[in-house]
Amino acid sequence: MTGTFSVEVLRKGVEERDIDAINSLVAQLLGKVKKGNKRSSQNRRTVTLLQEVAAIMVVRNGGSIVGLGIFSEKPTLTHKVGWIDDLVVDENFRRRGVGEALIKAMIEAGKDRGLERLNCTCRPEKVPANNLCLKVGFKFIGTINGTNFHTFEYGS
Image (cartoon, rainbow, N blue to C red):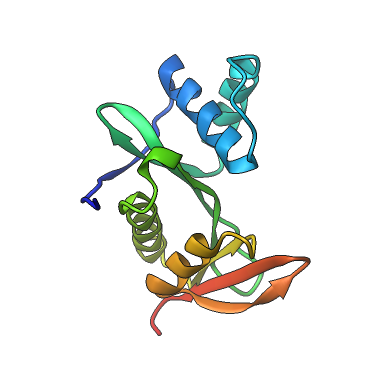
């Protein structure tokens, strides 16, 4: 069952339950089994530092974070470029539109910031993630160091 999900930017002063949800999602992203809150304080510091340079975009279900992605601008001397990093959806909410909502919100954020393009990478074995990138308008550029590289060109 797919649905319409709203995306929000995680604000400063992150609650402990959000840190727990982020820990769980990071474990899923890395393919590891969740082993409690051993990294909770470290991840709180990481989230706080990350919020200074990027937008942590999240989708909630019943108040709990079920998907997140990192949107950042990484301009070069010649281009205004953005990146999507660490996009992950809770395994119980996959294939329901959460990832698509996150990516579309990041595309819109890039447009609002006047970016020329938005880039993301996916491991080749993550077929649904690669397909989702193509579905929402990213173009597959190639495989670099064993990782698939996709780009979204604004105005094309």
